[in-house]
Length: 90
Image (cartoon, rainbow, N blue to C red; front, side, top):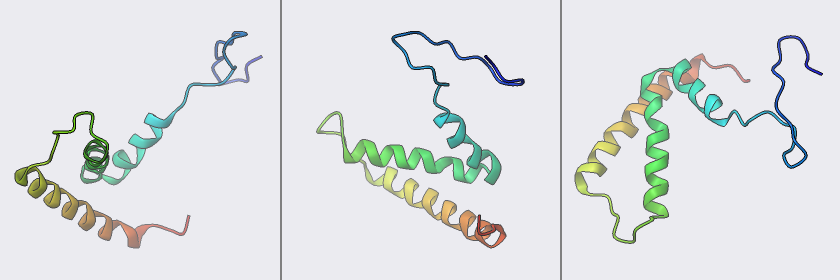
């Protein structure tokens, strides 16, 4: 049975009857809501993870990448500093 306005999700005995995860949808909303500067945060987080847990032991960041990352981090920090006073408790 499907409630009005809801999609029915396919179920089978081998698969639980649950909607697909909406993680990617949720992670895109803040960047769309708060501007393009914050969109870079996800890339920085993923790159840090790649360097922290490399697939190839020889993978390293170079000085140019580090310099660009610092500029991006400064832009994110500045954008968040302007945003924080406008946010409520929840």
